[in-house]
Image (spheres, rainbow, N blue to C red):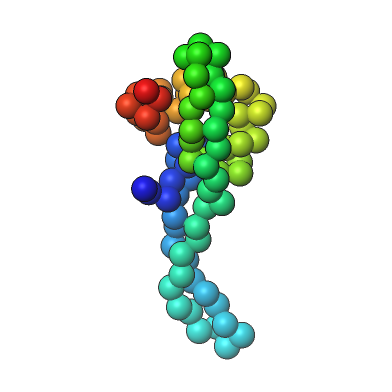
Length: 83
C-alpha cells in the first residue's frame, strides 16, 4: 500500500533536518493518513478509503460523491478500488 491520499494525492515528501549548528541531514515528511469508511448512496454500499486529514475535511465540505468524481477525474482514484 502506498503512502498516498486517495482524494488529494498527498504523498511522502523529502527535506532536511537542520540542527542548531545548521548541519543538514535528509528526512521524509509523511502525510497524516487514515483508513476511513464512507457510505456512498449512489453505489448503495460502503467504500473504504485511505485519506489524509485534509482529505477528510474536503469530503465533509463538498460531499463524498463529488470528492470521488474529482479524484477519478484527476487520476488519484481508480475505478477498481470502488468495486
